[in-house]
Length: 113
Length: 114
Image (cartoon, rainbow over all chains, first blue to last red):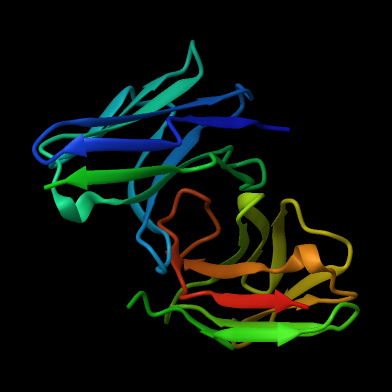
């Protein structure tokens, strides 16, 4: 089955700096890669996603890049704010063949004011 | 508030027991997903139902079962509970069958097995 690795497990940045979280996957059949943000004690929320036919996607301060050849994808947050502090999870899925979801182990991001 | 509801919020039970977790999807959503989140295993996909039928199966134990009813609410049944089943159980709903549809998560049910 698919194996998703996520790094780093913890990340601290100064407010205004950028944060980058990286994930690798093993199954070349994976073609959909969502990112979730989970604040302490709350539910996961989708923040951005990317399909395998796209190399990059942006939504305001958040961007995701995908390198299918190397089987890795990254989340980029620019101009970080204290409210960006949360745990971020990446996931890989192969839609069209059963909707299995495989999650990374999470990155705890702390934005220091 | 995502519009997805889960009951109960907390559940404390003993090993060997059986419990049922309930999820009501957002109005209009036909797909329901179940996830388990624990400290040692992280977030794991368990199962997906679409319009009453099972569509995808993840790391769901044989002791666990789920179903989606005609009114689209879903139940996750956990039996012969073990200490390791203690976790936060989320359900999520989405509009269609496709896994690329945005999933909206419920608040979760925290299960503690003593």
